[in-house]
Amino acid sequence: MVAITESTDLNFEIAVMIAKIKESMANYMRKGSGWVFDHIEQLKIYLNNFKPLAGSSYIPLPSELARRKAIINVQNKDDQCFLWAILSALHHKEVDGNHAYRLNQYKMWEKELNFDGIELPVSPKAIDKFETRNANLNINIFGFDGVNEDEEEDLQLYTLRISKNNGAQHVDVLFLTGTDKQHYCWINSISRLLSSQVTEHGHDILFCLKCMNHFSRQEILDEHMEYCGQKKAVRIEMPEEGTPLASKATNVR
Image (cartoon, rainbow, N blue to C red; front, side, top):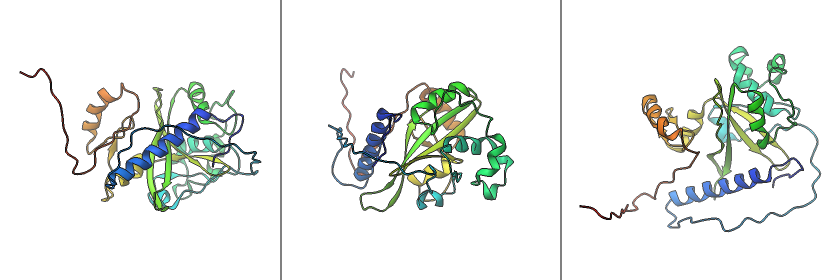
């Protein structure tokens, strides 16, 4: 369930639903279900009157995410979690790393960012405006689907937004949703967080955030980005293991 208000970006919420469905189906097919996902015919949205609970937008990390030790989740008691997520990324080297989740460590930089004309809490659709106000920042947003078909925790991340900005400071942000609130937190190691989706050995892997392909060396990723960096963000889906690959050629001499 998602709380919808006047400021909610419905297109974004629907995109999140579709991304979760695609991720769930891809995971199902990878496990050899024998089914092939074609397309989503329709999404039904049911609306009910809802009175949101007062209080913080803070959401604790699911245990599977916390175990990766790749996210700084500032424990806010206000509606400024996006602000604290960005500040934790910009100033993590200047605070006590053992308590990087404590909000009071970032208070001195509270007025550093330009939020003119941006309502709090920050909606995903307002991030374009935020980047315009703070041109030195590139903000990527990722979603998380934490339950598999067996209703058990399962680490599956997907891209919600790739920045088109050319700022000097790059920030990856996780967007969590609860029944009555939404929450942002900083991903301090995208490699550590995503590597569990492609390997069980725990080694850091380099990822292209445009297509979510992974690489073992920086020079290979750099070469790949010369081409992929000009494209829109996509998601690569591989065939099931054991599925024969076929190609068709015409006018071959």
